[in-house]
Length: 287
Image (cartoon, rainbow, N blue to C red; front, side):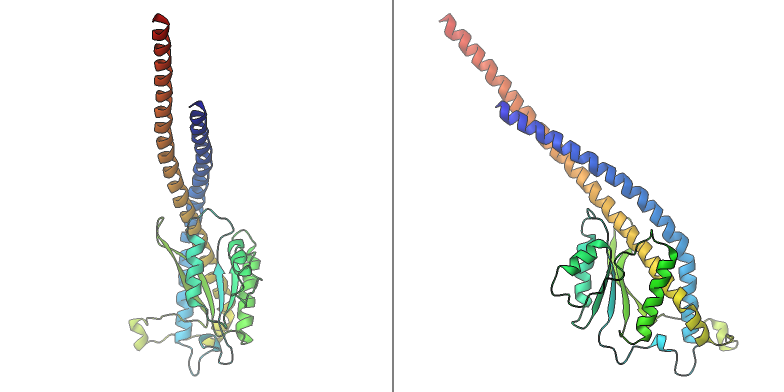
């Protein structure tokens, strides 16, 4: 009986020790969640204004239009840049992302993972034959120049006709409990534009031209898109991790309560058995 009591007691202590770790991780994820939420809010206005400006420029690029708004006719397949996490313990964050990517891929497509979890997933599966590992180390802690460098590489690869489309796949943040994998087409640019009422009698005039401004702003636009989606993916990751650690803490509480009841029952049974043995021994001596 004492062996069973000790085993249950050790399990309770083990669960409590694990719970200390999950509570600490939940606190860290909560702090990071606020940090990335603030970063996303601060960047939202700039990214939105730049996107609106690019939509305006593409809408007023006359004649045949710039090649940045058209598919590469000679390319076979797309490039999918997939933003995953570097750390685990974030529930189904990565698995949901990988499943979503599988619904988009065709045999001619290339995957460029960002994050160690994505790199490990695609490197160790033979069905992903076309893999680019040049962006795997990118994250928010790197210099802004590295993000700008990546934007230039993306632009050059599209200009060289290597891919029909370049698509960024990330996890969209809805709220602290809801987030879902989604995709954003970086190139060719496909932005919706709603003309202002005054454009009918007073159309905008661009100097030197809308196309020249598109080509000048393209690296900044691509860098802005990548940074904003990377921040949103990081925010979703921390929200997922906080939710997972909160669930782990609740499960630990339930398990501790259950084990405590079992421990108390076993302890009470042991005490009862000892009392019974003492009484029986006393009665035997009196006889």
